Image 1: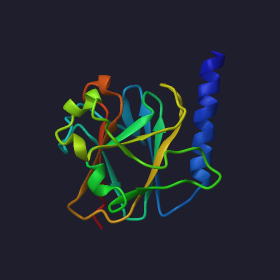
Image 2: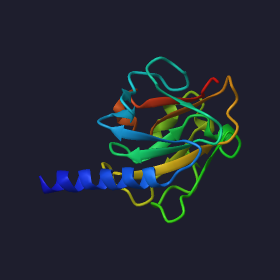
Image 3: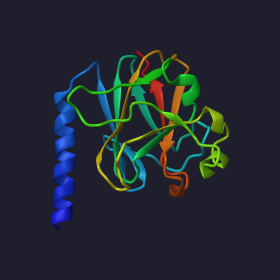
Length: 175
């Protein structure tokens, strides 16, 4: 019971921090019970490399920031990160805020997840430093820089055993 209370306190603290740091629009995506969650929507069954109905879709504008919050996972996989990082989106550090990943790394050559993604050399993984599995907190914050109207940023959980349930897509909001 005390552990659950401490977890809820940590989540409340994170949301207070997120609401006090304002930007164009700040969106939060929570790793919750084996799914990505935003507002009242959850990710469903999807496949890597494809934008499909089962992904959690986030509608954004250029300049928006997305806070990925840990729970089940402490990693975010950007499926086409090699081509997007620094161009379409970039990782940002919040001054005075939580410790967040400062860069997205490629999958290692021996990483078993290389067989899971259609283009493993394009994958970039952002990991929350010093976090164990199940820890709440900000994994990474990205700012959308130049997402084209027909573009999509595909993201997933870094935890491969979740079997196609933690996939999302970031798309440009239509005016």
